[in-house]
Length: 344
Ligand code: CP3
Image (cartoon, rainbow, N blue to C red):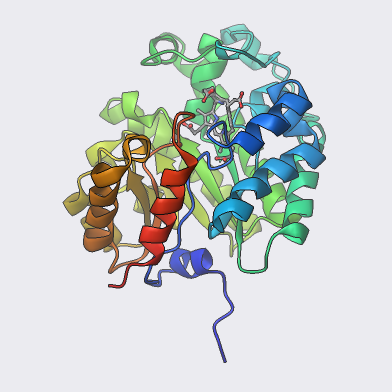
C-alpha cells in the first residue's frame, strides 16, 4: 500500500524524504501579483487577516501556483497583541505599530477574550483544511513570547530590540510576567489551531539573535519550552517547528531544551553545524532569501549546497527567513523545480 502521509509530517516524524518537501516562509505575500490584488480589495492588513474569505484565498495562492508541500495559515504574529487590545496597526511604509506597554500595563493585560477575538483566524484554519489538496500539510503558527514582547514594549519594530532588552534588565519581574502570559495564551492559541485542522505549527522567534547567552536561556528557551510543554500535555501528538532566527551556536541544545520536533535554521547557520543538529532530528531551512532575488547561479549554488549537505537526512527545504517583496515569482518556480528534481 502506498504511504499516504503528508511528506512534511513524515519528515517531522524523523524520516528522510528525498527529494525533501518544500515550503517558504512568507510564501503568501507581496512578491505575488495575486496577493497584491487581494490585499488591495481587503483594505487594511488586519482586515485581510480577520476576513476568512480573503485569508483563505491568499493562503491558497502560492499552493495553486507552485504546489508547495505545506500551506501556512495567512495571519500575523501580532494578532496576539491585537487580541490583548494593544491597538495594533499596519500602516503603509511604517511596518507594524501598537501602543507601547509599561510595567504597570503588563499587570493590567486582559486575557479573557483572546481566543474569541481570534475566532476568524480559527475559522480560516478550518476552511483551509477542507479546501487544501489532501497531500498538502497545513501549518499553523504564532510568534514566540520574546519576539512578540519586543513589539509590545517598543510599540514598533526596532533594529536590535534595545527597548525590550533594556526593559528586561530594568523590570525583570514584569518582563517575566509578560513572557509567561504570552507563553500561556500562545499555547492555547496553537492548541486551538491544531483542533481547527492544522497538521503542525511553527513558533517564530524572529528576534532570538539579539539575545546574550543568559537572556537566550531565560527569554527564548524557557517560554518556548513552557509553551511546548503546555501543548504536549493537551495534544501529545502535536508536531512543532521552532525557528529561533539568528541564534547561531545557541541552537546547539535548543531542540532538547524546548522539546520541538524540528529546528528552523536561518541562512547564517553553517551547513556543517546544521548537519550536526540534524543528527538529533529534522531541520528546516536555510536558503538566503536574497539568493531568490538574485536568481541564476546564486540561486542554484545555494540550493545545491543545502541539498548535498542536508538532503540525506530529515530536511524540510525552506528559506532562512521570509521571502521578500522584490523576489521574482519565476525564480520561485525555478527553486521548486530544482529541489523537486534532486535525487540523493
Ligand atoms: O505566508 C506566510 O508566511 C504566512 C503569513 C505571515 C505573515 N507574517 C504575513 C505578513 C507570517 C507567518 C508572518 C509572521 C511574522 N509577522 C513574523 C515572524 C516571521 C518573520 O518574518 O520574522 C514577524 C516578525 C511579523 C511581524 C510583521 N508583520 C512585520 C515586522 C511586518 C512588516 C514587515 C513587512 O514585511 O512588511 C508584518 C507585515 C506582514 N505580515 C506582511 C505579510 C504578508 C506584509 C504586509 C502587507 O502585505 O502589507
